[in-house]
Amino acid sequence: MVDLPQKSLLTTTQIANRELKAMRFWVCVIGGFFAIDFVIAALAISMAVGDPSFRSIPGYGERAVAWDIRRGRKQNSKDLGWKVTLRPVEPRRDAIEITVRSLCCLNIN
Image 1 (cartoon, rainbow, N blue to C red):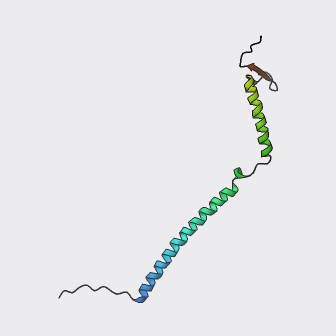
Image 2 (image 1 turned 135 degrees about the vertical axis):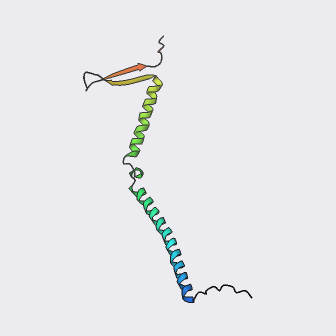
Image 3 (image 1 turned 180 degrees about the horizontal axis):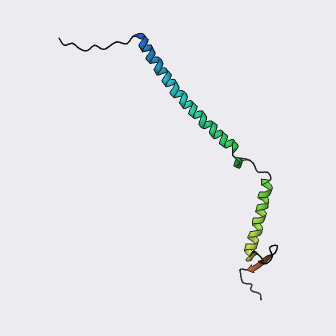
């Protein structure tokens, strides 16, 4: 007959200790995932609330209408074929030179 090595049997106390360690490990892992999730959510909320680019701009509607009017005037000027340039006059800093040029030929009969 062959003698097989005998394995030591665990007592109920040892089994309970191992189960307690496993329970603590998995509770900590799951709790860690929740903590990471809460940190990411708090960071996203703080970034969204603190960003001034998403706030409403006072007077935006009036400025948008004024922009439409300015764009229409520029298009009218472009349709006429005029080009206006401004440049400062060198000796004086408080003066500018305005040049208006016609970009198309005028046929006068």
